[in-house]
Amino acid sequence: CGQCRERPMVAPYKECPGKHACVGFLSNKHLECKRILVKKALQEAQLATARAQLPTAEQLRLPPMDHAQTKRAKLPLPARPCAKLKGRRVVSVADMHGDFTSLLQLLQGLGLVRRGVSEDPGTWRDIWEGGDALFLQLGDVVDRGDEGQRMWKFLWALQDEQ
Image 1 (cartoon, one colour):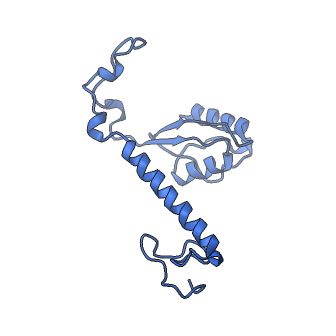
Image 2: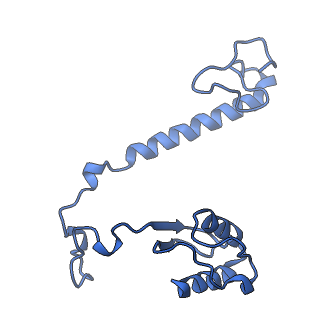
Image 3: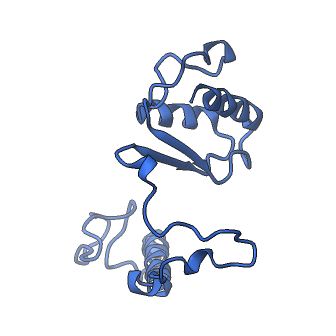
């Protein structure tokens, strides 16, 4: 990194993660490098641990219908894909957390909502451009952001068009 005479940092980081990241981070003048490398190593270890704890695809396979055999289930769910969705585009969006601007940009980028739609409810007519696509909003619509009410009204307007 040019800040020390020790050899430059090698794998797993091919580039310096910070201003002075290098192998010679043990000296006090490279304290920031040490923090960066320790933080990255910790993040990688946590990610590896989390991945190791995930069930494999084989472990997740359930016999047909078993997943619907609960006390609340009235009828078992079908074990095959719904024929009504065959060939349709299914778009799922989750956890927008009250961020209306990001939701709108995402839906426009996915080609579900026409360009020209804005935060102004007056622009929320004839907004659907997704054809026969199925749009699913999952997770938190409101949470941290401060545009939750606007998001709900927009999603209701969008639902009315489908």
